[in-house]
Length: 387
Ligand SMILES: Cc1ncc(COP(=O)(O)O)c(C=O)c1O
Image (cartoon, rainbow, N blue to C red; front, top):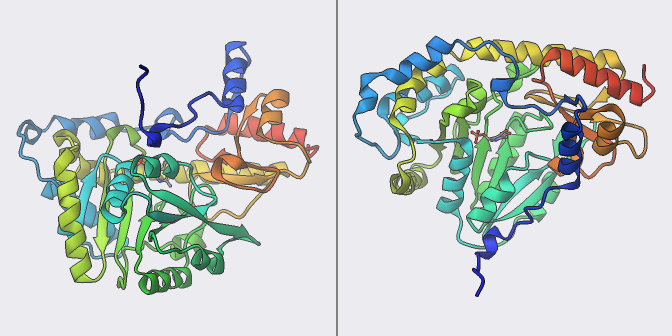
């Protein structure tokens, strides 16, 4: 008899046509310009190796004395990070995780039974599908639309709330649209959640990357202010310090005291079941957070230079307020990521990768090293007859 597997892992794991085309192009020795690189550790930023690695060798990391929520000293450093954003965060309402992704997993387990659903914006980063599958949670998309900027379609969002909906996920600012949730939008979200008994899950991994002065003033963490509904802010080292390999993230809980206390107690049991945080990373976290500006400054500069490059090329990009991505609008019918690879050796993400239904949308990473980015954008522009 052949082994049976769970239905939840019954994914189609075959290589996609696009992935196969990229692999074949590389194997045949073609030099590709990859404008999708979003791993900061390979984007030629200058990391201070000593400042990052020395704190890992602290003798405190030799003792195994696990706290399910994470070391108090590490949680206090995270609370300080939020203080820098104007928010008072109780270190006892923080749970450290090995990544934001693990944080989502914990929250889905906390809030949902098998078959319950969670609302997520579309377009957004395609990370949630697998996370939800693994927790037997169903994702329901709610649309964002573009009209001189990105907007949440609130009427449609409310229509999609059903009897089994448990939470709304807000990626603030969103990836790849770069849309930051405005104060009035936050109020409407909170009102919806209060009326339907839902929690808010707010992914703020790109919060520290506003583009331009106006956005720097406008991009406010959901940790700030009062919290009429149960709210969880997620973030971590991947983006804040450009250190995805260190595997540190967290969940910060807010909301009516009774709900928040119950949530924290349950999250503590979930975390205690795995105790997945390692001691050296927790000892080092305060140092990484303290040194984050070194890398953030480089990333912000790179994003600005690359955006200028797009603007100079004549290729149109949609309005972007924050983050590491830009959505390009390609007017020529039939031109997409596959054609760009075949004709110009440029690798970009098709908009459909992020759930965009419009034709002619592609997504590029703004942290791509500037020389490759400039060359790739010029090729796209030529392909569009813009240069
Ligand atoms: C919006 C968003 N959230 C979360 C993540 C994953 O972060 P982590 O490495 O902490 O799991 C990503 C990765 O790109 C992301 O784009």
